[in-house]
Structures are given as C-alpha cells and as structure tokens.
Length: 188
Image (cartoon, rainbow, N blue to C red; front, side, top):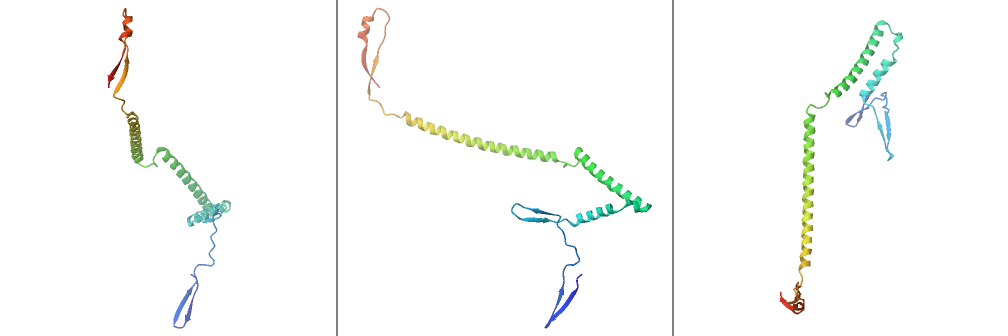
C-alpha cells in the first residue's frame, strides 16, 4: 500500500493517502477500433486472457533440451495431456452436435408451438383482409345499385300512346289487308 502522511491544520487532522501503485504496469489496449464517425474505442484484454497468455509463454519459452530427466518427462507429459484434452474436447463437441445431444430436449415442442402461433396469426390476418375486401365489395355493389336506381327513374309518358298494329294474312284476302290496317289508340 502507498505511504500515508498526517497533516494537522488547527484543531483538525487529515490523513493523506496515495491511491494506486506507481510501479504497476499500464494496460495496453489489445486493439483500437476506429469508427467512420471519427470516434475510437480501445479494447482491453481481460485478466483471464492475460493469465492464459502468460501460461502459454511459460510452456513455449522452456527449452526441453536443457532439462534433466524428471522435468523433461513432466514437460512432455503435460504437453501431450493438454493436446489430447483439447482434441477430445473438439471431437466431443462435434460428435454431440451430430448426434443431437447439444439440442434442447423438447425443441420439437417449441418449434411446433411457434409454427402453430404463426398459422393462427396468418389466419387472423387473412380473415381480416377478407372482411375488408367483402366490405369494399358490398360498398361498391351498393354504389352501383344506387346509380342504377337513379338511371331507371324516368318521367312518365303521356297517357295516350299511339301504336301501329299490322297483321299479315296468308292467302286470298290480300286486298282486304290494306283495309284492315288501322291506327288505334291504346291506353297505357
């Protein structure tokens, strides 16, 4: 901890404490991200990542040719064990995904539920659209019916209408045909 110093001014005493360690190394950002807007963001590594990096450095920095038999066997046994463990972890993950062990136990039920919800939503949307279309059709039919009703209402004709009625007779009475044709008034 840092050194502390006691100061007294009048009747009060204050203790001055320095925070932080001067010898502590400054964290260097792992990477700096530059954005299009001109801003930058520094990404620092976590403590766990630093510890893993230090362990890897220790294993790689060791020269096995200068070790005695005991540490030499221990070094290679540790290297083989870590390699084997990482290979087993990788293969186990791949086999689990192929066999379906990594999928949720009741995923089929979840998928079925979402499929049914989607069908219900689509059906409701379809019903709503058909109701709107039916309503628009009824309105257009009513508008057409109103137009037809206004067109068929015409003023009444005069009470007396003249109709020309002519009959054609077959046979010998062709002379009398011209006499039989008359104009007659037909009441309506």
